[in-house]
Amino acid sequence: MEIAVIGAGYVGLTTAICLAHLGHEVRVFDLIPEKIDSLKEGSLPIFEPGLEQMLQEGIQSGKLQFFSNLPETLKGGKVTFLCVPTPQDEDGAADLSHVLSAAADCSKWLEPNSILATKSTVPVGSALRLEDSVARHDVHVVSNPEFLREGSAINDFLYPDRLVIGTRSREAAETMLQLYSQVQAPKVVTSPESSELIKYASNAFLAIKLSFANDIAALCERTGGDVSQVMHGMGLDSRIGPNFLKAGPGWGGSCFPKDTRALISISARFGLSMPIVDAALESNEKAHKRMVDTVMEQLGGSLEGKKIAVWGIAFKANTDDFRDSPALAVISRLKRRGAIVTAYDPKAKAKNDNFKRAESALEAVEGADALIVLTEWNEFQDVNAEQVRRLMAGNAILDCRSILNSAIWRKSFNNFRAVGMHA
Ligand code: UDX
Ligand code: UDX
Image (cartoon, rainbow, N blue to C red; front, side, top):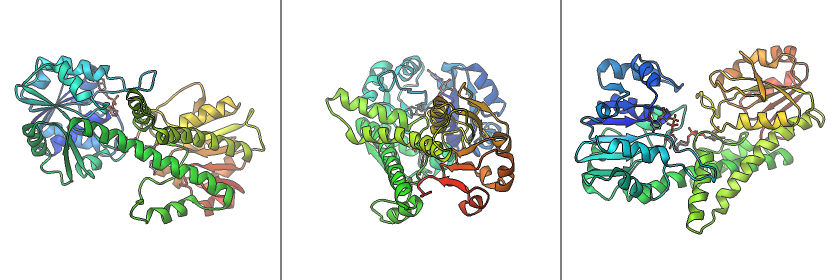
């Protein structure tokens, strides 16, 4: 099938490259010409495991093409995917301006009897607004939300838990089902409104699950429980499930923070509150603060002038993305309490006045009073604890992702703490 993809970000590129891998003819557009130029050369502007190689395969097979010109991108397209950002506005609502303007720009060039599908996360009711924006009776607007986790996006695209297709047109639903015919997964065909809500409800529920795990972690720290064992024991109950229960420094990324706030904002527009989602956000702030309180306690009650090494800036491992990263939230709180922070991340290129960057895990710890692990990169597990001990000035470690082998690290550091574990 001939496909167009608008927006070459994390979602647009994963969608385009995976659809080309499945044998479709895919044309990709982005507003930034430099991005298109480097993509044509086979260079991926983001870090996502396995994706660059599949990009090159797609280019070589001729199935994947990149354009800075919109009419050329849309030529022949049976389905056009909108993958442009929906950031949050000042009130926490989703800002639809990119989506609406991209749809309006496409309108004139969309093929007759084609589909405009939104992958971008859009509030309930957006499909109708997009229909107005497109203003074409021969084009169907379909909601087809993405459920791609950065770091495992290819797997999530090719082997999803489910596909959701929101449309009232049987013909459009059939075309979408045909497009995904090789993807083995339950396919939920529903109204655009339900489809749009499935996306927000899923992300909010996952955020609630994580906030719950983080709240239990705090209780474990006080009582002598071990949160990983508590979550394991809880997750074996099939009604609860074992996934997405890993306690950490709080959740972040390009989706959960904005989608939870957007759900609250949509509900408020309809006169409803979402107290459980509110609580999940509040718990997340508390999780950031608890990390800082813990390291402060480890250092004797003050962070003023203390040198803190941080391992990990990305919002999770296996991505270079640091949008709404809990690591950056924790670093900002450390700075406010007077700490001097040096941070290292293998991929995330974030920079700000709250910290100095180091080029390696070992460089970051030189002369540090404490080390905090904020992203669960595998390479941190390979660092030698004794070598770190020799480089550091102090002996405090806080592992907010429970990735260091505590039995080994405790031998070198008698002031070792891990999230959700009693001191
Ligand atoms: C996506 C979705 O769009 C968002 O709704 C979802 O909730 C999370 O993931 P993402 O792929 O992460 O966003 O966005 P980003 O990496 O910012 O890429 C968007 C791309 O679209 C950029 O390359 C930008 O240049 C391009 N763009 C933006 C357009 O081509 N046209 C526009 O009108 C706006
Ligand atoms: C999310 C959704 O999971 C995905 O379906 C799509 O809607 C895009 O948004 P993403 O944000 O890329 O994916 O990553 P995800 O794996 O969901 O992690 C989000 C945050 O939760 C990260 O900060 C991560 O570290 C944290 N997390 C996740 C935990 O703290 N513990 C867990 O068990 C899982």
